[in-house]
Image 1 (tube, rainbow, N blue to C red):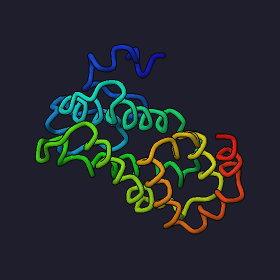
Image 2: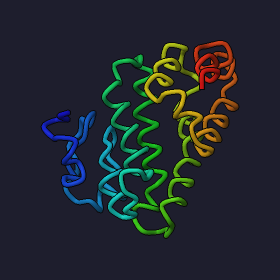
Image 3: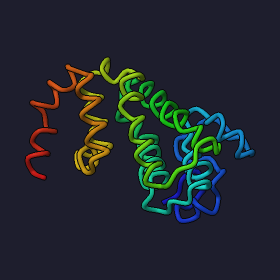
Image 4: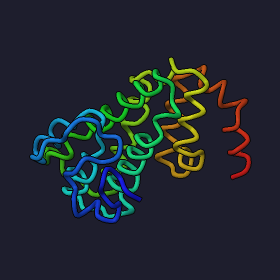
Length: 186
């Protein structure tokens, strides 16, 4: 697959190159990216978190952060304009919340990084306006992320439950929608 002229297999070799969905040019200085992640960019995950923690392809920076950041960027057309604003604000919030880890202010293992990162998810989702979105966006978000991802690990389940619990309308929708049916199929 080609993303703006970059083969995905070369992603780790070119960590400071703009990734799918990035509409603003990236700073060439990784310190700038790591201390102030660019809006509408996924470069923070490989250039900052992975470069510092070396968690590998199954670790949070690449397997979760970069993967879902690029998935949302690539599939933003499924979201309404309000959903796209939510997506961009959430992407930026999630990255900004991890700046102290990326810049070396905090030392931890890859497992601790993953737990800390997951702990930021519900706050960023809700704070960026998840509850104000309509059903069309909720369906698109669940479709992009996938139900198994939402409940596939304890950390993911905790953050999904926290976000749903803070969002009564979302919880009611999820109760009666395909999310419930999909969970039954797990």
